[in-house]
Image (cartoon, rainbow, N blue to C red; front, side, top):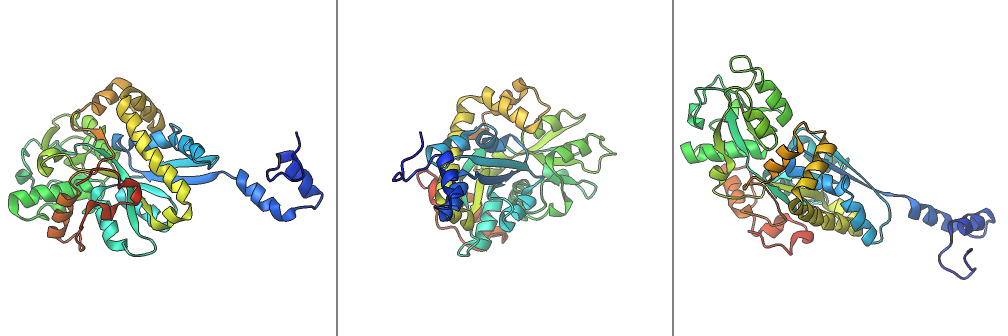
Length: 347
């Protein structure tokens, strides 16, 4: 039924009829804008740790939260990048609205940007999972056995969580966190496994600090064996992956920002509650080679969890202060997060 003259809301037919009659051309842009979908761009790395982003985008959780908050249609995309450096570049350049990053990237970005218009903080935490240093070199049993002939693949030299795991292990052994830095090379996880597949004596790298499912893939290679595990190096569970956003993204559309924060928490709950469904979604979204049963087994690892609770933030921040990577001291974990995470019990 056509809207009455005094009604504030017009039907689509009524709106166009009014515009055609020249009665309310000023209102036309508002009507068109209301029908334009909001766009949200995510960038992430590859791995099961990032599954909540796929749940938000491919699983439709973000759209559900946006609808609940009255935002209408949201066009969300999730692009997979090879390491933290391109994720950070996308965030700071504005080509992405949200990006997944490990705790070291959050800390260093916050250190460089807090108090600026382009300040970066975490919307919330996402997941924890073991990083594993493995090698195909039969002579390497501990990190002390690496020689100048070895090369250790990490997503990004010096700035990735994987590289910093090696630095923390080196600090414990030699009181020199940078002892093995010169042996690290930047390679995406899939590329690292592919490089190691050439075999010892032929591969361009001899070791890899990986996350699931690439750890499982790598350990299937001939001669591959574990050298170190992050749970041992860090002394317990530690927040691994967070979802980051700049202040500009937060302020541009606060309601949309809230929808993303709500969707992140809801996605974490869904990933934890039904790991089989989560595995099915991730396999399709990432075109993963593993079977559903293999992915579920990885998600059921006791050291793997999707969680909104920040873990051991202060401990890791103190390490980065010691090695000079972080200049500012973190007074409270909340300094690193937007208000959307303040209801969590963190440390």
